Image (cartoon, rainbow, N blue to C red; front, side):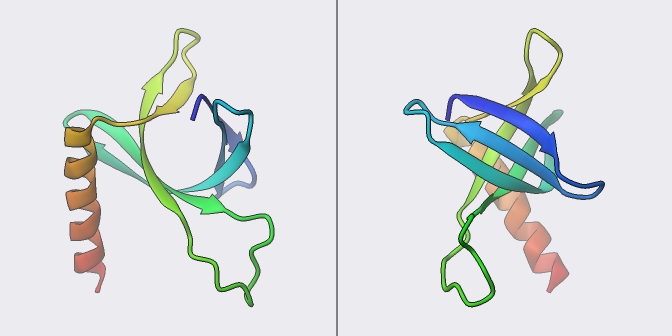
Length: 99
């Protein structure tokens, strides 16, 4: 994904717009921020435009590293494999604790 921008859709939901190298637009709901080693990572769930309660689609989820660009705005980038594994382990631990 090339372009990543935060869009406020309501006071509580944060929707992230991502544009890939082919110009395809995807929207993700920022479910949670997970701090790891002094950096923040977002757990994002893809929003499907045709998703409704009768849809049997699976939610696609990704983990993105949050960085500040040269304009001081947040951008979402792909984490390294090592960062991904650390964040995934913490996320799974959070889920286990919630059960």
